[in-house]
Length: 190
Image 1: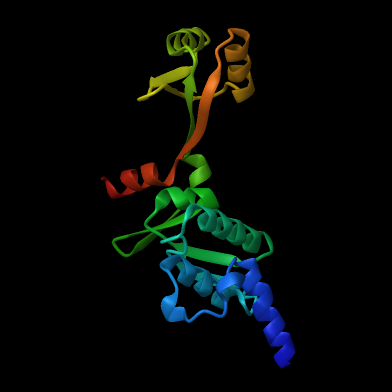
Image 2 (image 1 turned 45 degrees about the horizontal axis):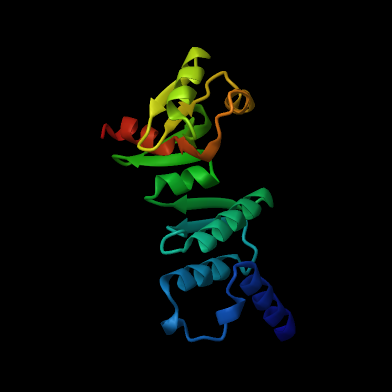
C-alpha cells in the first residue's frame, strides 16, 4: 500500500509539473509552486468533483498554460470542476459555462452565445489592408499598431487569402475572445 501511495504521489507531482521541487520545504515555495501543490493535493485521489479557488493566480505563463491543460484534461475525463476566479479572461480560456452570483442569486450563462472573437493584425501596409478589407465588407477597427477585425460570416482563411493576393505581409496576428467580461458588465450594470 505504501509503495502504491508513493508511486501515485510521484505520478501526480510529475503531472502538475512539480517533480523538481517535491522535496523542498513548502515554506520555501513560491506562490506558483504552492498553486501546483494545491492542485496535486486536490487530484491525488482522482475526485469526480473539484472546487478550485483562483487556481491560476500567481502562475507564470508556462505554469498557467499547464494548469489550463490539466483542467481541460480532467474535465474531458469526467471530473466536474467548479472554478472560482476574478480573472474572467482566464475563465474564457477553460470553459463556456459560467455561473455569476448576484445579490444571492446564481445566474447561469453559456458564454458561447455571448462571445465575440476579434483578430488583431499588424501588417506591412495598414492603409491598403484596411481599404481592401472594408471593400469586402469586413468590420474593421483601428488599434494602436494595426487593426482588429470581427469576422462575422467571413472566414479567416478568406481574409488571409485577400491580404496575400494583395501582397500585404502579416507581421503579427492575435486572437481575442470577448465574452465573460462583457457579459459580467451587462449583468452587473458596470
